[in-house]
Length: 243
Image (cartoon, rainbow, N blue to C red; front, side, top):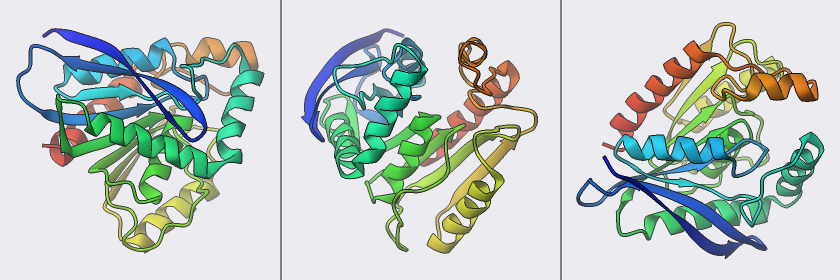
């Protein structure tokens, strides 16, 4: 295995984006691609590490810059402001998601017909949004992501299969959002799987979640066992939908 990385710079949705590409240079030929969308903190070292791990599974991984300039929030207030900026202009946010997909597809290592998206917290919500707005993805995975929608998809709009890895003790995702998500997926005829992990809280995949939760008074906690189980669920999902 020979994991290599490079920065991809491009503009979309009113921002100059600097995303992080990872791939295994020891692997020959084109392979599936996966977009990774991060927590509200931005393009963190954690998201880059996940991109390298996904590359190690045999995919080309793009840790996507959603804010521009590969920004990482300095604190909770800045993270909230950056996230709110995305939701204030969902057309621009959708354009950035589409640009990430186009850039990943254009890479010489990527089989453009086999691309998916995955995300954590905010990134999980954005992955689902990418599906709702009709981006041509094979699959979407959300880890402890928000489930509420800002776009009403119509039957036939959502092309990918969907896997949601949810913490059953996630205080940031209300039950009414879970119920509405199930109803939405069923009404749209989407093939999806919703896995709720007992006792797991928001941020269960990120080893830094507990510390940040304590620092900022947020209900976050890392859960090593659930991190491992959800990663295995993701691996099986990508193996099936991306081949």
